[in-house]
Image (cartoon, rainbow over all chains, first blue to last red; front, side, top):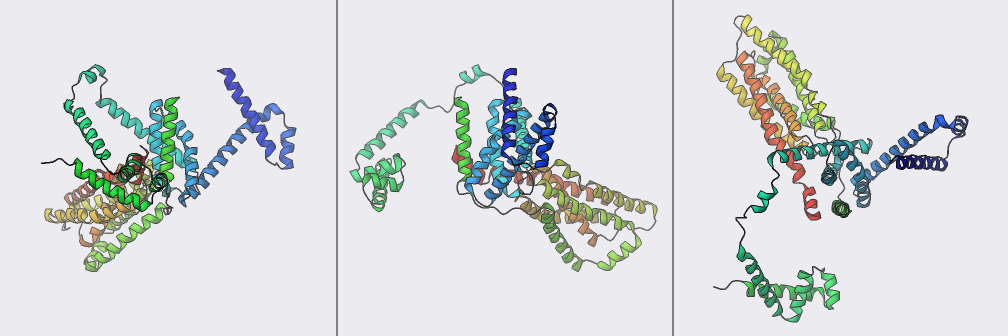
Length: 239
Length: 235
């Protein structure tokens, strides 16, 4: 555990050093870093880098949200994906149990969607998101607590409880209806059967079905309409 | 592992659904600007009521009892601050402390009205409202609060309040106080203890009714929006 955390710290230092190498610095600033003893500057440098990364991430999220407000779906998807780790971390900090954290994530994503017109891009997006995630986590905790008060854990009672609405004949009726539908479908002309098969049972689009059957979309529509009419006639219960 | 990949795909599906056909949105104006729009409607109502009110009687009343200015100022300030607080609270990241904004002005209003009550007891010949007049006050405050509250709730629904009950209660305070302030046009006498009790009861009634009914409206705003349809699709 300790070895892993040491590795993380080392990785953080290395990435910070790489980051500094990639960002052009003013000569005076470079001079200060070189002149200072490395043991005294390292933690400050790490803090500065972390803060700079946070600020950069926040600016990026703000820009993505501004684009989403203008209707950019790609930016919106990127933003929502980026929000998930932040929401999870806030939910964990609030004490939400592991198997309910995804509920908080979904709640917060929906709330962001509903409230996206209220965000002002001149303010921090991460702060805005954090308050929403925190509130949603608290809401979930309250809901869970209320549910816990109302419900008891009784697996034996649950298993031995007889379902009043269970109908043993339902399975037979369903099998019968399925058989009737299959017979009715089999009795249709080939073109009509194909239209039902592709468009209804396999849920293909009209264009895909047209390519597969080598027929026009209009012909498929007409055949489907006729097939459904014929099926309705055959499936209706007779007096 | 399987559970995490399932949840990941559920999030991914929801994100895709939310981003599909994403419509551009118009950013909401700052809460104070939106509050001004609602206050403009209150001012317009005041102008209409002033045209049918007995203004000379009101003038004589204000000249005879300068403390009434304090009560009117307190109630008018409560209207403005409560409206600003309601619009602030309607934002999803609003702090609950905004609900305290109208408190000092409300205290000024209550204390100044209390002074009016005391004069009824100590100054002989002062006209105080009887029970019938007090009942009229109740009907006026509740009756005028309904349309003002409805308008305010419609405006608040455009934001996304995550504290719907509190937001609705403060909206109720703004509406009821606006109605109580406008009542001064038809209330050219001191508020006796019974009358003041009726005013406080009417304002409290409007706040509780808003909390109960409008709070639910603001909450269902989140549940019944296009968002739940996206959730249904993703499930």
